[in-house]
Image (cartoon, rainbow, N blue to C red; front, side, top):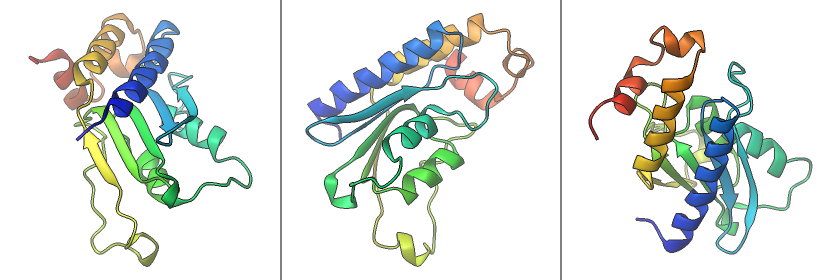
Length: 170
């Protein structure tokens, strides 16, 4: 279930994704927020850098040095695409309570991954996960990207499950 605050924060994530698209980069945007303030926002900056995902860029900017955040602060990650294993693993490691994503990623998304049995560190910190908020808006951005890109990975059919979800019927 999502709230009016979730709607607003996902709107900011979509704006970040639009900025990436305008730069010709895969349009993923991300926002970290508590119930009463935005902690940071970012988007993917480089097309071919496997580490410069929107979420990782955001995590590095917000969780830099000795940060004051704890799990009880109610921090939510909003992102326009279901996180990959790198971003989801980092999400689990940080003091975040919720994940709200827009479009599922049948190719590389890991939000549905369950650690069973979970390591002791993660046994008492299962996050709430909400998917599908503004899915069609994100899907439209990804479709525009796929139509315009000349990146060989995408042009040569990379991530076929993702491309099928973007290009297929709603």
